[in-house]
Image (cartoon, rainbow, N blue to C red; front, side, top):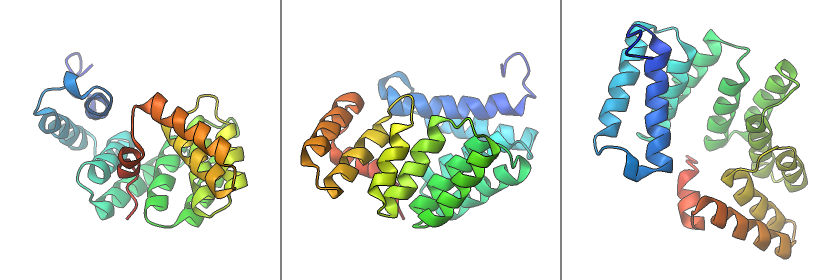
Length: 198
């Protein structure tokens, strides 16, 4: 897409997102300097269209996940929502960031707003709702949210294991933990390191 239309900002932004996903899922398939290429592509997107919400959302993710720059991540996520307030994907990503900041109540408010905008909720909304409830120690509600997902992710599996442990159901906790580790190929420590709580 960037070759066909080098001025298409969103294609440059999504190239960054794609490179980051491949680096996470298949690290052996990306060149060593993948981040330099990804960041250059994202900066190109921002220069071409500073009002593209996806470019801001991805910049926020990069600032958070790669650089640990929480303040800049917040700015870009909020800018994406300001530009496109009805995009529930942006709202869900912002709600996760609020959880990382220790503000799950605000995160839940954002998720409830997203669910009013789009009653045909994506799995991401249910997963983030579950995370909010988990952090609020409402473990039954968290499990109920995770159960609404059509496809279980590693995040919902690990958090369900923790919910069931908190609910004193060790058998279910062990089953979900075993499934989470088998499906993701991640240890508990590796998963915890991916949860960027401030």
